[in-house]
Image (cartoon, rainbow, N blue to C red; front, top):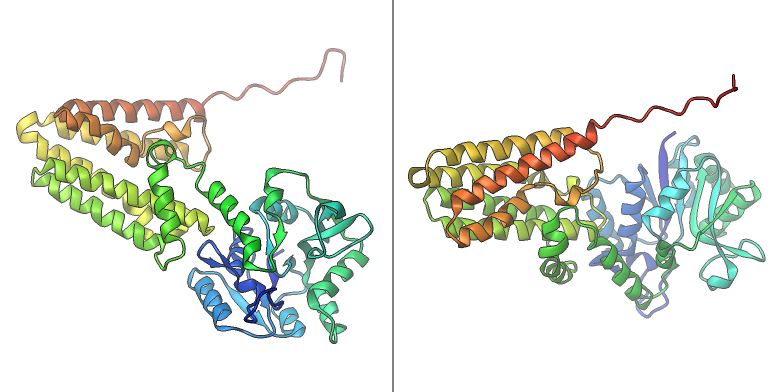
Amino acid sequence: MTLAALIAAYHEADEPGGRLRATLPLAGRTLLERQARLAGAAGADPIVVAVERVSPELAAAIDRLRAQGLRVAVARTAQEAADSVHPGDRLLVMADGLIAAETHVSRLVSLGGHSLLTIPDVRVDDRFERIDAHSRWAGLALVDGALLQETAGLLHDWDLQSTLLRRAVQSGARQLAVRGEPADDQLTVAERAEDLDEIEARMFEGALAGRRDWVSAYWLGPVETLAVRALVARAVSPPALNLAAFLLTVLGGLTFLSRWLWLGMLLLLLSTLVEGIAARLAAVRLQDEEETSWWSLVLPAAAGGALVALAAGLAPVRGWGCLSLAGSTIAFALAQRVEAGARRLVGQRWLAEHKGLAWLLLPFAIANLWGTGLTLLSIYAGASFFWVQRQVHAPVPPAAGPAAGED
C-alpha cells in the first residue's frame, strides 16, 4: 500500500502577529518543512497539508518543498484532504507544530493497521492531546485513507486533527508508547519560537555528528560546524556548495597540469572543506546527500582527475611511475566502492576516499616528497580495498543444526 501523509498547519502560534505554528523558524527553514522532510524520508507521497489560510511564509515553504521534488498538496477543507488520499493508502498523521525524530516516524510506519504514538501524561502538558487518564497523543498516528474520508464526512465544524485522533482511538488503534530514548527529548509541540531553541541545538548536534569520513569527523569538523551555523538561515543551498567544490577541484587539477603544485593543493583542500559543509548543511535540513545535486555524485570523479593531473605534472621531474601510482590508487578506490555497495562496514570511516586522500598527501607536499606521498596513497587505497573485500566475502558461519536426539 502507498504511504501518504497529512500534516495539520492551521493553528496560530502563541505569539503576536498571527503567525502559524507551521511557519515557526527552525534551522533556517520552517517547522512545516522539517515535518514534510520527515514524512518524505519515510516514503510518504503525497504529503497533504491541511490549512485554513495560506500565509506568504507558508506558501514559500510549500514552494521550496515542491522544488525539492516532494509532492505537496494543500487542502483547505477536510473533504479536500480526503480527496487527496486514496481510501486504501496508509496515512501518516502529524500534529500541528509537532517536532519529532526520524526514529519516531520509522517506528510507527513499520507497524500495520491503525497505530498511535503515545507519551505518559506525567511527562508533558496540554499541548499534547489527552487519550486517557495515563497517556497523551505524542503527535504521530498511522491510519488509512478510508478513516480520513469517513471523518471528513461527519466533521462539520470540528477540528480535523482532534476528530481524526478520536476516530482512530475508537477504531481500536494500537497505542505505542515512547521508550525513553535520547530521541524522545526532541518530541515536542511548538507553540512559539522559543520552544524550538533547545530542539534546534539538539538537531545540530545530531546532524553535525557521525560524518562518514575521518576528515569531516575529526579534522575539519569544527570549521564545517561554524560554517553551517552561519549559512543555515541563508539562501545558500547544498547543490550550490557542491558545484563550488566541483569547480575548485577542476581548477586544482588544471593548476597541477601547469605545475603550480602548491596552488593546486590548496584548491583541492579547499574543495574538501566546501564539500563537507554542503554535506552537513544537507543533514541539518534533512536532505539526503545523494539528492542534494548531481555535482555531489561527480565530485569523486573530479578528484580522481585531479590526482591524474598531479601525477602528470610530476612525471617529467619525478618519473612516469607517478602516473602508475595515480592509476592504481583510482583503481583500488573504484573497486572498493563496487565491493562495498550500500553496506555499512566495520571501520568504514577510515577507508580511503577522495577527501582523506587529499589531506593525507598534505604532509608529504610540505616536505616536497610528492612521489612518496603518491606511493602511500596507493598503498592506503589498496589496503582499504582488501579490508572491504575481506568483510564482504567473509564466509557465513553455518547455521546451528538440531541438538542430538532431536528429529
